[in-house]
Image (tube, rainbow, N blue to C red; front, side, top):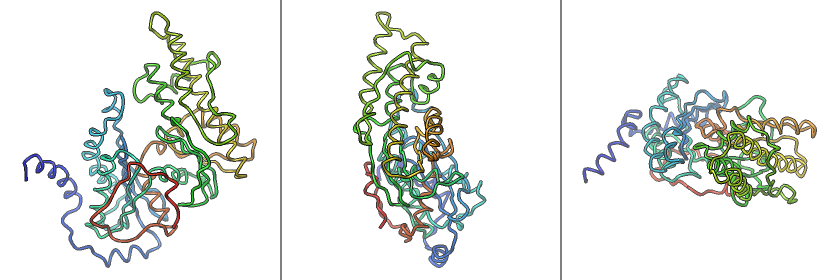
Length: 385
């Protein structure tokens, strides 16, 4: 074996060996007992992009512990996520985080009943890190490994909060890569109501922030600066606000922000700080107006009275405020995950695994030697069998 390949294998093998000593015996008797027991502990792994997350969830007791490492500081100097760096950092972090979660929850390896991991969508290399660790751990312990759709993790994460929304409900999935409205009738029972035709809402935040020179990550920076601005100073479009359907479009808004920013900079090329804050406020208001209006329309069209908001943009202060004010007038309720669970995290993956186990949708077979990840994976393909 070439030395470079040998070093590569050693980097990947040593941490996992430290966590799981050579355990060739599958301990199938213990495995069978766990599957048939009323309560099961799921260990979940998230590594789809630039956060490494690990968590333990009990099917009866809920979230036991979770740990998260964000790569934001590492990617800042590049102005965005560098896939190769993301993968390498997942390799460094995932085993220490696993040890941390087991220690926090007071668990031994023998307490784990199944392993869940993000199988897609996401960055291929990043997904492979979490999937390989999860599958290796499951195989060595003779446990089932449950592949989880990343968006299903987000979709179900508000169910970790109290009060827990009951099915059915409308879900607004809103993040840097996705903007969708779904009808959710149960775990694995998802109907697409509307989606973005171009940019996602989170992408509109990030790209607008970049146009205004706010750096990375742009969305949160834009929202913070927006609190100092006057949204009424600039009139920006609300794309597809009155389209009659539940689809979204944000590419035109990005173009409008660019045009306004160029006009304000003028010959000097500099953007006045107050003008920048006002433009941030106007941009945020335009995005939130569309998200809120479409969500309300979805509730009216379906006749449902529960709206679940999930994904990174679900942490946005103005979105929470706007929906919190509007929905009571419809005798409807908005449900948000805790702020710490709006970003990518292992808790939502472990919880989705637990919910699939309880719904009888998880294939409870010991881990297999082969597995795949799906960088592109439509949520509509995920149906209850």
